[in-house]
Length: 521
Ligand code: G6Q
Image 1 (cartoon, rainbow, N blue to C red):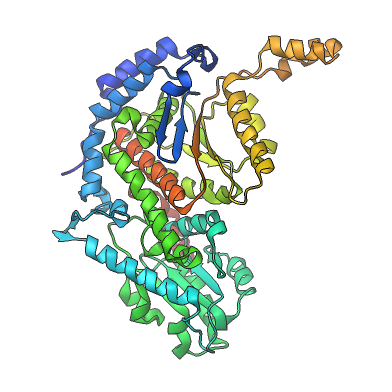
Image 2 (image 1 turned 120 degrees about the vertical axis):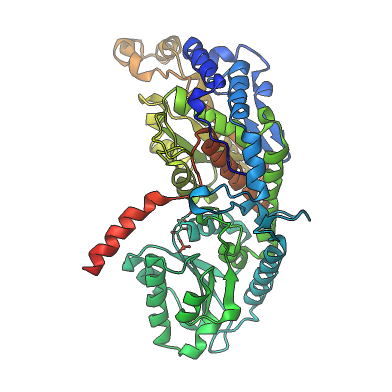
């Protein structure tokens, strides 16, 4: 049941891709658009999602060779193994089953010969009834008042996902105010505490292990602060936990009834679909939370069942490999044209860089090709006034994902038209640039003929800078679930092709150990 183990650079497809790259590396996106049908030929519609990947340095042949590579390393087999619960996180001896968390099918998924679907359903019911109680005001604090504030205490996978989703779904939020405490920097927790009333605040301690230094330190500080006005008998009304470590949760003083489960077959950075997402459900209500999961499931089914040349996560993964491993691109930008998605780049940095930032392959051998891409970004249009200069005219090749929505949520169409004109304007500027001739003509027709000699080279845009347009109808819990699952599958696909293990994260340990030693001195 183990994953296959193929060095991608030794495959036939890789050799063909290398030859193809050497012959075609100077192709220009502008020339490719001489084909009037290019946009249609390199676009995919999937319900409310439209992917336009026409503005890439690829031909039909590039795509078919990349698909050949995916087939040669048997991506299909790897996808099935992941969905079916094979122990594909070999270095930690675990299954990787975040997809089971959002599956609505009746099919059993076995872990140690036991179907995990019933426990997932039980957890969902518990999230639902708890969220309903808190949101409706039936859940009372120690002085009989309803809850007004939620504080999620967690870090890494137990913080970034819920925080990003709560921020992104602000439009769908209820009356509760949600806060996130993560950093061990005491000023972080102090600033949050400042805003709280202990009588009306609910603390959700999210820690799979319940041993994470930052989370436990913040939780203890918060408990001490709480106990300045309340007693230990009031803790059950104000503290709940999401964890696998029942003993540690119990030692902290949290009531058994207030513990939501986590499982070893869900990795931290893929856990927002589990009870780790409790603060999402509290903040936007269970139905919206469930819609988020349903959107993710829709993408799961697409990923699992669609041919690679029409498969959105697979295509985005292959394009990323094309630029990373053939063109030598070092980074990728994620550029959402929605202020709601301002935390998406941070979230994706963990998901992508913790998963695929690996330097040894599945044999344990040092890798001699490039893996994990560096991902970064920010929202449009703000970033147009910040880093886009370098993307347009700098010396580096930076493929970019432009994420956009056809409709805005509040319906200010004038704003939205401007936003989307910028979205398309950036994409076109990157792809097609501005030639010497165009700059020449422009300077001439604007009466700046005398400046042509001095200004022309600085005003030229080479263009030929690739991007993908990921366009949804509207930002909804469901479309957001789809977007996040899309990136999760892109990550897995790249990990398979690079022959690495995407689901461990030993690289984060050494610094932690050294910090602990320094503290113990
Ligand atoms: C994610 C990592 C990591 C983890 C945090 C928090 O994939 O495993 O970011 O989520 O270290 O861990 P706990 O939930 O155990 O506190």
